[in-house]
Amino acid sequence: MLGRTANGLYWMFRYIERAENIARLIDAGLRMSLTRSGTGDDDWDGVLQSAGVREAYDEGHAKLTRVDAVDYLLRDHSNPSSVMSCIDSGRNNARMVRTALTRETWEATNECWIELKALLSKRPKAAEMPEIIDVIKRRAGLIRGAFHGSMLRNELYNFARIGTFIERADNTSRILDVKYYVLLPSISQVGSSIDNVQWESILRSVSAHRSYSWAYDEEYKAANIADFLILNGQMPRSLAYCYEKIVSNLGYISSSYGGERLPAHDTADAIRTSLQTRQIKDVMDQGLHEFLEDFVNRNNQLGMEISDGYRFYV
Image 1 (cartoon, one colour):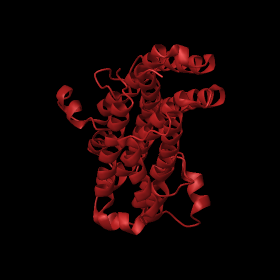
Image 2 (image 1 turned 90 degrees about the horizontal axis):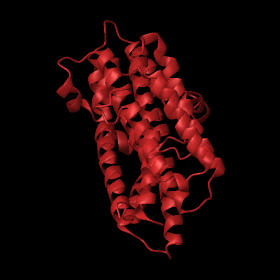
Image 3 (image 1 turned 90 degrees about the vertical axis):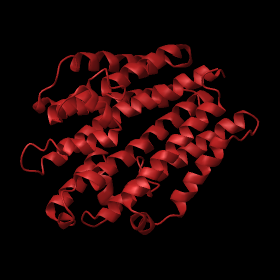
Image 4 (image 1 turned 60 degrees about the horizontal axis):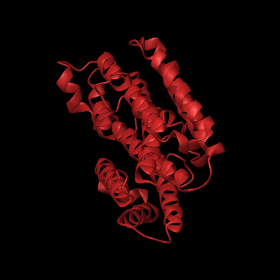
């Protein structure tokens, strides 16, 4: 398979996943801002930092406001990680590898682009945000469903899945970081009703509110929620689950190429092993923010090794 085809599929699904997860990040910020008095504009500093676009936002805005931050994350084309930019990039990659996609997958991608282009043609009102976030999540889910239900399980499928789970792992860690690192007002509120509401908001933003109650028959606790989203291999947005899928799909690709192993395989194996053998107490003792920051760096390293190893630009 040509490297540029692998590249197109990998990045198509990274961008689709990123669009959904930026919407989830906005949702987390909106939900947690409801727990504060005042405008809560300062809360969005943490959301922008976690999205990795704080400095870029400052280049085009004199002041940080909730309205401008949401618009920048949602529909600003100068932000390559905005939802609309990601949908554009995902569709462009899909067009590049059109002959490698089933008709159902292409149509779901194109319909997503058409609907969101119309929906985000102007700055949305605050009351419209819940519906817009739901549409983004629903459309991304339809693309994944069409792809999952109609594609051959070959290396094309594997590269798309790897892109999905590398992006998902990155974004789950960033959403967790929003809560722990930035949005809790003070240490005195740890364990308070505000703290619990904010943790509940994190679970809702990753569609994990009900499944958390199935896995942990307890009230919201920071350590349990962190364990659920980092180490629980049954949770489809956890870091452990994502890396189980990344390693298995890299293994399928290796088998397709005669068992060849690249640096990316060793890196992915090492990250999966660290997640399988670590206890949540170890994570909390290290510092949740520090752990997440290190994870994001290692996840990015894996992405670069996959790109280099499989010659994505050849």
